[in-house]
Image (cartoon, rainbow, N blue to C red; front, side, top):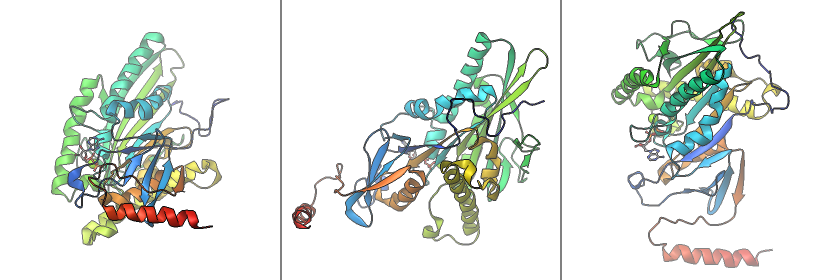
Length: 378
Ligand code: ADP
Ligand code: MG
């Protein structure tokens, strides 16, 4: 029998973990993304908060707080250590976990999850760590055998597609009697080492990138989902078996496609993306509000249905919201922050545009005027 976690099972003395931990990562300012040379409109304040200009009143900033804030200087290693590494030991104990990169296209989701050869992201680091943890566990306690494997899939237009064995087949999502979510027919590959993973995953992820440039930036319209499974089996009777799942997800872009004037097929794609992302935001909200209280709408989209046993409940979930500092991204950043924030506060002070060359005299005068009028008012 697969001894899986029991929904709602929380060890005594530990906090209910159904809330999704939210981290925000600000990517570095890029001049070429800033057509009007306006400088950044977002900046970090400390390891948990940032501020952004208030679009309703540019003399005010909006102050947001999260579980963690990673500024533009944060390295790939630091993001991994702070937001991902702590949850990995749980999957060796038969628990589930998920890590998502959320945010508009161009804000750094793929950089965060996949990274590059020089700056590997969360995916290669997490997989390497899982192998290290399993190796260490084997040394300290040899009563269990461990095996590691992976699947790689994509949700595109509300269709579930196998990326290890590409075809146009939409795979079904099922639930077994123990409430585990599974996808019959999805390729599952055993992994013996990290280099095994490298060999299997890299070509598949490159496939996806190449296809994306041909098919209307498919990568910004689909959710890429890597599943790493750790199965452990007791060596002696009753040979108990436990499965821990880790989902590593590069979500579709959260930008509002209505503003980009998409038509026809593009509009259909956007609609489908919005359904999964919109449902994800409802699920995260419901979980943050205390989970059990209201209905968590997992069944309303493919993405949330697939993640049902690995998001909320006794699973360990982290959402890394990626944002970009340029004004071009302002409204998408604002929406993403409102989704991610634990709290928001209007701060009544002008935003200091540190990287703008020379502050125009006019701006300076208007600030002085404001201060003068502001202090005279009752
Ligand atoms: P997304 O996947 O959200 O569309 P990307 O990860 O492709 O965004 O990032 C867009 C561009 O910004 C890429 O060229 C990427 O290398 C760069 N980039 C993103 N985040 C960072 C970062 N933290 N440091 C350096 N470059 C970054
Ligand atoms: Mg991307």
